[in-house]
Length: 364
Image 1 (cartoon, rainbow, N blue to C red):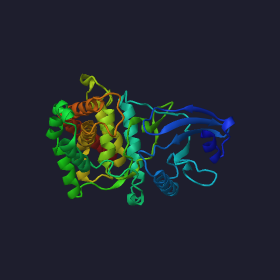
Image 2: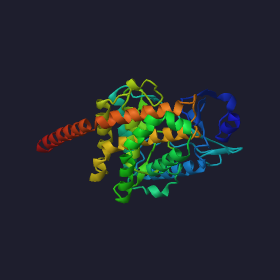
Image 3: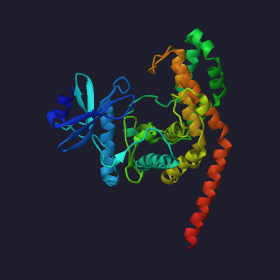
Image 4: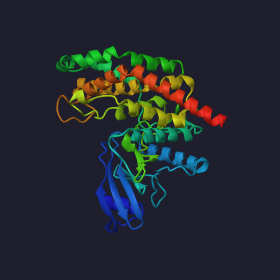
């Protein structure tokens, strides 16, 4: 199969070295070393992305725009087949080929604040340079992906129709989700008030979706553009909060290891705001901290809903897997919310220092 795919891109299978690459849970990925260079080959998971052609269409539109307005920006667009297509289809399987960026690497977890800073800066830059691009020109690759109102409705249905046994087992998690229901209520209000501007949004801002430079650790570009579509900045910032702040991820079962690293929060704020400060309206800037609550709560909600529905969406390795994931995210949400006043103080002090520094530059 891979032989046929490579041939579609003008590569000779027998002349290529092929090896599995990365540990992504959605798409199957290989690194391909050929005479003409190195590439990343992916098989698109059509169970998640029902229309891979939409992803290819979005990427092509963005590439054409960036080639015109910001040609120096490193945009990792897929190569085209010998027939000029952005995705290769064979027996309802879809593949795409990307150039491998030399002297780059990714990390799977934030181990130091500097990594969070460079990642946040890259995600902010990506949205900023596409500010004049009409986000509604993009196809929606996963409908309602970050629609918290829909997730809340699905949770309510799970409470009514879910497993009675699991409803009893998940009593603590359910009560916590209901305690934090104000987060979903606020999201609904924000939409009614038109407080959030629709932008080109990445929607999957995990640290391993940023290329870092091997020598300096500086961010080079964002990758994994499958979920790039119209959205709100709280999705991107919130997902960084959800996946960067704690030293352990959503699979951690020892809840006492879950914590919020304040230096990482500041790094996210600095990196993102350096790029997006002039783009975010005042009300959006006020929602910077809320973005973390928005995404952490939604993920906890999704895990718990899936548990109550007998695990119909997320792959699980045991019967309590999704419940454990939900408890993990609820614990993170509690820690995050307890840090809210400290976050405000961090932002206030940073902005004050920034204003002083700017005044000195102007005076000189």
